[in-house]
Amino acid sequence: MDNDIERVLYSEETIKEACQRLGHQMAHDYQDKNPIIVGVLKGAVLFMTDVIREMDILAELDFIDVSSYNGGTASSGEVKLVHDLSIDVADRDIILVEDIIDTGRTLKFMQDLLKERHAHSIKVCTLLDKPSGRVVEAKADYVGFIVPNEFVVGYGLDYGDQYRNLPYVGVLKPEIYENK
Ligand SMILES: O=P(O)(O)OC[C@H]1O[C@H](OP(=O)(O)OP(=O)(O)O)[C@H](O)[C@@H]1O
Ligand SMILES: [Mg+2]
Figure (cartoon, helix red, strand yellow):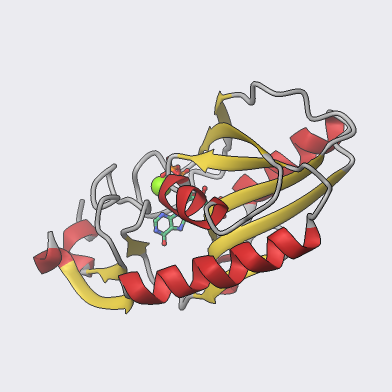
């Protein structure tokens, strides 16, 4: 798989340092709040499991699966709820954990859903933020790295459901997805 990567953006070690920084920041902010930490399937799973282990606080975990890329490199524009939460979020403090915010459509969909269900507070932690991709207004409260306007894979991020198991984040060679 490494041959398909044009260049590594964030190494395993760099990602680990980001998980420690973000985890400690959130643990400080959520001391005694017992938040529900919601991982956004599938892409955020690796980041979620690493960052929560840096958080020495009481917290519950849940997962949600929303999809809009269908394995491609561009948002379909339509976000679908594939797998819903299992915990009632009413009156609870929620931390949404994402791998990347690009157009912002996925995040806005989830924030609207949580507001409809009367969550007490909603904050967002993302490993990667691609502000150049925004189509809708969407902002994260805890950000690992700002990425350039390129399609990245690895550490949970996919192209065609592949590359998620790369231990680093890298830029996919355009020839892999061009003319597909
Ligand atoms: O800001 P956006 O343009 O909405 O893109 C960000 C979302 O897109 C990707 O998920 P995807 O829909 O590919 O599902 P996956 O996590 O299962 O790969 C990524 O994991 C984010 O959840
Ligand atoms: Mg994806």
